[in-house]
Structures are given as C-alpha cells and as structure tokens.
Length: 286
View 1 (cartoon, rainbow, N blue to C red):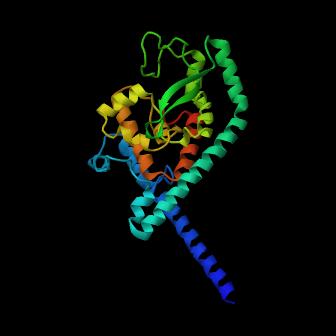
View 2: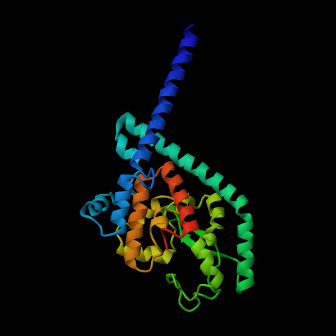
C-alpha cells in the first residue's frame, strides 16, 4: 500500500513539475514574441521601424553589458527555486530549439532539393565560378565558421575591393543572383550549417569578422548578438531591409536584441511563418 502511495505521490510531483515547465513556456511566449499582431511586440516593432522613443533607448541602455539579455523566463521567475525552475525551462528551450532546428533542416533539405538543384543549374549555366560560395562568418561566442550560400555575385567580385557591403542594386550581383537574393533561395545551403550546429534556423544573421570588428567599435551593444547561434532568418530579416549604412545596422541590432531578450519556441515559429510570407509576397524586408 505504501509503495503504491509513494508511486502516486511521485506521479503527482512529476505532473506538477511538468505543468510548471509548461506554464514557464507559456509565460515566456506571452511575454515574448507570441505573434506579430501582439500589442506589446507590435509597439516595439513600430518604435524600431520609426524613431526610437526614450523608453526604447532606456530598454537597451539598461541591459547588462557583460552578457546578452536573458530570455523572458529568467526575468519573470527571479531567483530561488523559481529561478532554478526558470533555468531548467531555459535549458529545455535550448534542447527543444536544437531538435526543432535539426528536424526543420532535414525536412527542408528533402523538400527543397528540387529547388536547390534548379538554383545550382541556374548559377552554373549563367556565370563563371563555383556554384556554392563559402565565406568565414562569426558565430556564437565569436567562433568562426564557414557559411554556405549559392553564389550570387561574379567570382571576382571582391578581387580589387576586399570586403565591402553588398547593396540592393550592387553591380557585382549577377542577374540570376538578384532573383536568388530576393527569393532568399541563396540562403538554402545554410541548412547544412544548421545540421552541423553552427547556425540555428532563427537568430541574428552572422557577419564577416571584418564587419564584426568594425561594428563593435561603433555600436556598443553589437557584441551581444554573439550570445546566441546565428540564424538563416530572424526578426530583423522579416521586419528590416538590407543594410546600406551604419544607421541600418544600428536598427538591425535592436531587432536582434529584442529577439534575444524574448526568444521562445512560439516566437521562432511565428518568425518562420513571417519569413514564408516575406518570400512569397515580397513584404517586410527589402
């Protein structure tokens, strides 16, 4: 009898603990990017799209300089036992996000294989040079890795210039490259980077070491982007445009920090949906 009671108590404890975890995720989602129509997020995105308000400036000025902003769960639960629970929820989120990344990358590589094959043929037949373009980028915690993309520029694009920004009407971009960039098809090979654990499906876009060094010197919060894995798409990519000047980079960083601060699986799911919408309709990022 006692053994049965003991097992029953164990089941109830586990059930309560599981409910606590789910509630933690629920709070994280409700405090985070639950949906693009969410009032709080909509307000913050509106501020980022226009002029920065004093509240927005205060939000980023007060964030700790030594490390990246924490997910919403940590801010909600505080310290003690609830803080430990929040830490556990955060760990579960990281594991769940990795599982989500692996599954999404595998499914994407299988379903999008015909599209990638056509893109590869188009690149090969319309310009000289390799089909896949690999480049060193800065990942989580400053780790360097090779990113993969379909080549969209001439093979000698940086022969005489070195590392320079690619602009919307960049003359170095090939005709087929313009289409691949606009449709985001050029980013599909990065699903391999996701499988290798160098990138996530959702996160701040990775930059080249030269640009990271440059931006870190002029944008105080820029290095906080390196606290998480870079992504194929992200909040900045669906609400912002291509960077053409340092002001664009500053605004993109604010989108990235907003995502890092409020990241949760529901946010990731909504960003994926928004990405499809941007690709299919041309809305959002230009």
